[in-house]
Length: 277
Image 1: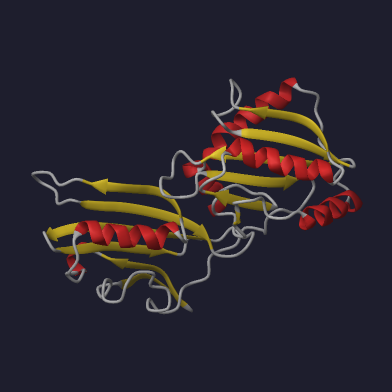
Image 2: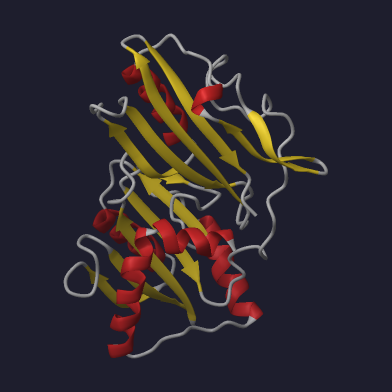
């Protein structure tokens, strides 16, 4: 499954979820009621909660990269503040805090987990820093509910139509793209090798800035790195991003872009867009 694949590969939350488990092993277990009546009541309450101040709802969950009912991201709110504000809102709606841990031996520094008892239902509030994806939001906030169906069954990604219909880059930058994995109803992988790239009349810095702006607004970046020139390799940058294509789904999309300096005022590009199944 693509979601589990990327949790394994890139998610910072994997690091501290293991610590959460160790913490709960020492604390009294609270699993929460999972019958339909409790789950429905808790889900209805969660729907009434406003989006936390200075945070943005990520309906695809890409920014959290782990399954939950609601995923929020922010570039200005620290994890502790995000966790505290959301916990206060849950308490105001009748919740009771069962456990609360931030940082220290059990968690990544600044990461927090709060377990809230809402009339017998267990709600997990998890907030953590984004240390591994420069350029994306600095904080992730995830709300989960025991017993709730929090994601769709695993599903294959639908093929793309034409490259023009999905091309995220400026016009004229990807005239060398071809379909390298055709499907009956479209294409699963588009690719442009460096040798097939048009020569683009911008500097490497300009091209990298444009690609970053495009990808940071749409993808969860796993790689976002400048590449200095050496005696054997031209300078440029490498970016690799992932997103889910349906709300709550397990279908995924990968975009890899490598900008390569041609000369002081021109670049060429390697581009690969993959509808991962």
